[in-house]
Image 1: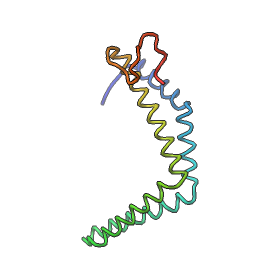
Image 2: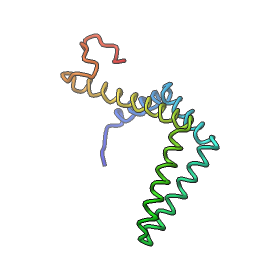
Image 3: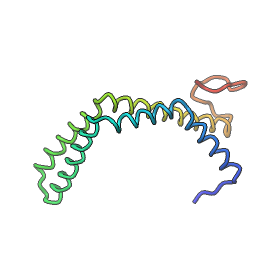
Image 4: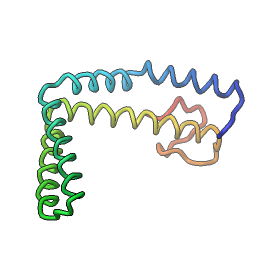
Length: 131
């Protein structure tokens, strides 16, 4: 297991709290709750899970024709989930959150390895952060 100083751990914990207070994190949590509360999403996810169970049963029987048909049905179910507005909003919010985390890692790398160029391509002297 990786070990670090308590001071570093406390600073990382503080950064984590700041990230959790960010608009990106809050939007993601709101989108997750909306997706979980969406009756259409619940129905589609239940259908997807049932298809997964049926695929596993068909695999145990070695019925390749049934497996192929069920996989196609499952792909259709996945597309139905992805087309729901609540799913699209969740995917967008998670993308924004991932961008924030990637930017955080890039900023840390720029501080630790200042001679490496950041993605913005600008001059880092007096930089107030990418964005």
